[in-house]
Amino acid sequence: MPVWHVDLLDNDMTEFTEIPVLDASCLQDGSDRSQLTADFAKAYGETGFGYIINHGIDQALIDAAFKASAEFHALPHKAKMAVELNHLHRGYIPINTSTDVNSKLADVKKPNQSASFMMMREDAAENPDAFLSGPNQWPDLEGFRDTLTAYHDALKGLAQNLMEVALAAANVTDTSVLKHFETPTTWLRLLHYPPQPAASPDDLYGSAPHTDFGCLTILAQDGVGGLQVQTPAGNWVDAPKIPGSFVVNVGDMLNRMSNGRLKSTPHRVINKSGKERYSCPFFFDPNVACDVAPLAGTGAPEFEAINFGDFLRGELQAGYDKHKTTTTDTFA
Image 1: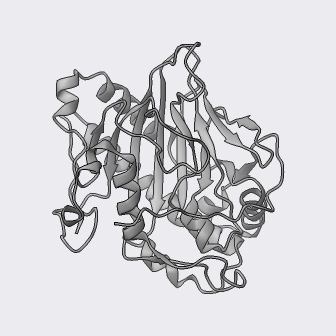
Image 2: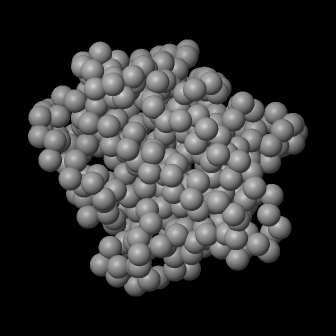
Image 3: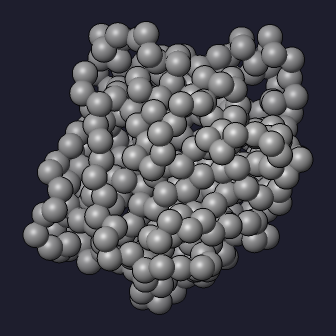
């Protein structure tokens, strides 16, 4: 089983001191997307992160997702462990069981200081020929499944629109890759970060410095803070909550598809606020059958093609205790 190391082309990134804000109202009213496309090309060609406003997702639905998250994390440990992360990467991930050992940005020895619930695409049954296909695990919480399903589906629709904008921003001339996002690989993660002691060691993180490995991340976060984005000079810029916005960033696979035009930027979470922190990231990736390579229109290829499913196997086996003893055959 290979462990993939993804090389990124970020040598022309621009030093920045704040995260840009992009208005996505054209995605809701059907108006011309040229301004958003130009803004996307600049923001994700220079920074790799942006705040998306006027995105069309009902605030009441976002609030309901956070309420569901708080209710889940407040359950007794035994109730959460009843839906512990399984080989389909769905369920509860206890604290101290996930370590970013593949990080290219730090020598990570300590596990991330967070616990989470992971939901992926809901399939009726596991398909042995489709890696990570299958049903989700659901806790015994009234309304939990309905709320998360509605939130997941709304974010999937937004992500599909943003992927079209991203490909246009990267000057992609053949958008047939979008067929791999019709039945995408999706991940909705309900994260809970306990407060870290003020005197905790420098190498203890809520989430260690990393780049996201997929295509698009759409993050809703509370007002506690702690998310930081790294600049090319190695500085860390805070990305606090802006009411009514999502933080959206590009991952390694979209960096590869865009031939380095769209940047996958390092980020981390350090929660020394003294308060509990909650966030709900949604990750939008291609189907596992997709071979990821630079797309037509982005210039002479700077990357080789890799299969997304094969890449995922290596990432999950390296980073999660639950997968470390799982054989390749279990994933087939």
